[in-house]
Length: 177
Image (cartoon, rainbow, N blue to C red; front, side, top):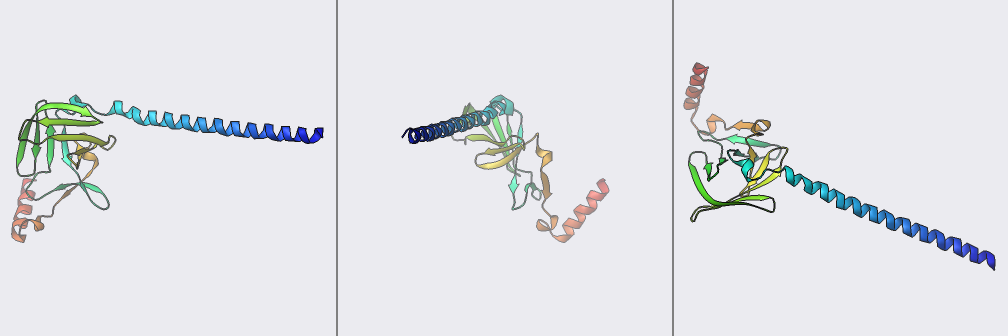
């Protein structure tokens, strides 16, 4: 009778050891997840604050199926936004607009500029700090520091003008160079 008790005791001890080690492993895994979240959240300190985006320019990114580009329309500028201490200037391509804002604040990693009455607000959120991608009022922009890292595409002249006008523009470009 003593031998079965010993076997049961050894078996019970092994089960307790296995359960304890599994529980310890779970605690370690949970600790790793907490540390990972802490590391992920630590990039917030690297994100620009309101003062960091003063005098910065942001250019609208056109997303295609294969790549992101800066699309230069015929006879128009790229949609551009510039932030100043007391206003935001936006160039829509052929028209521009300046908005004065009364309040700027950071809420949930978004920089928000609240306008004076009858003007629109602007919300800036960093999407990819390495690429310089921002979401501004639900559109994707790239900041002026990273503008040369993205492909620029000029709309073909023939899509905007007739063939004779395009030939004349090409001739003038050659003379200027």
